[in-house]
Length: 493
Image (tube, rainbow, N blue to C red; front, side, top):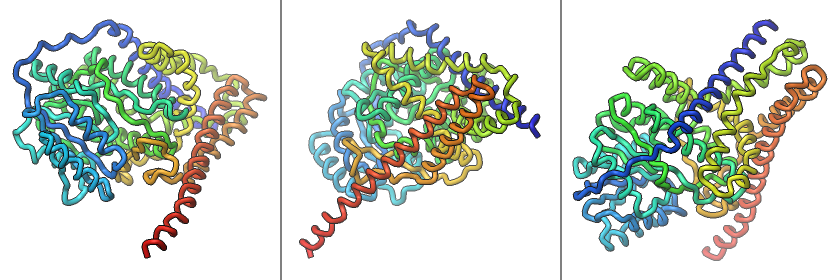
């Protein structure tokens, strides 16, 4: 039994090393192409008709900001169609309807689209909207409710699609509307900047398969339809369609200098829900796309890198397995002679990605890197909730689309704030205690493992504490609202 556990431990460590090595490779490709800037498209005389789709669900606090951004777009009005795909069931509907009327009166071709039922969630809404527009538009841009595109968003993206017949999608870089709200949002900026500065640039410039990120991208409608359209088989419909379109022969292009800022979740429960949805959806895509990917004529190396990309959330359950194995193997003495130092060296690729991206984007990059411990704690501390999501994705359990709430202000006392997930929080405290016990044992038997276990203990404890704090804030806000509601009811009655 001990031999089996040790073999499993080594196998998991090797898997994590493979993923870490892929991060180093992305960094190398980025450095090779970091000075290879895109060639601006030649000016075009006739602008194509563009459909902008805005899928929303209960977004009362950000919908007007989104619609105002549409009115501010610097694009020919006679070539622009805007669809507000509104599946809301709260007062967002009334707020949006009134604002749409005002924009229509101002000359914007905008439609408030309400479906009979919220079937297929975001993918269903996007597909429904495309069916309504028929052949009236050649291109479609997708923007989530919390994004605010600059006025030149279309003028800087559309020309690439017009002048390149084989180009199916142009993705822009996500910026941040609220990076300094708290340490959680600061940590997220590092994570997203690493993805958009390093990974997306490397995949695009290196000629690899890349993804539409769900918002801030412009598609050829023909590419969407030839790829089979939007599907609601997964919770990450953007990744699903991206791979199908590229396997069908369409190319994608990433435009790093075009920034479309969006809102970061400032609440731990909202952040964990977003990450779990991405983890489950990506794992679902792995099941649906792995076969078509390996049956395609995509070069072998690209298939390998794409497979690792589809497995990007697998490190979460592997980390949990490694952690659970560490204590019994330490107690048995099986780890005493096991030297995995080279694996830790390869793991330096991930922090180098964040350092490089911050240095590329911000003059005060050294100060911003003070948030790296928070990012590291976030990555480790949500491993349990992401592991549950990955398992759910593998077995296709509970496929309900749980949106990330947008607040547009302080989330405390906000009606869209999420309740704490008590089970996940207490499991995080369990893993913190387990890691602490393992660290004490390691200090006496295999000191080289102690720093890692201390970091794990701290990370799980921090995420658990933030979950408890958010739950306390949520409960206090709810309690403060009850007397007000009672007074209001008495006055009205």
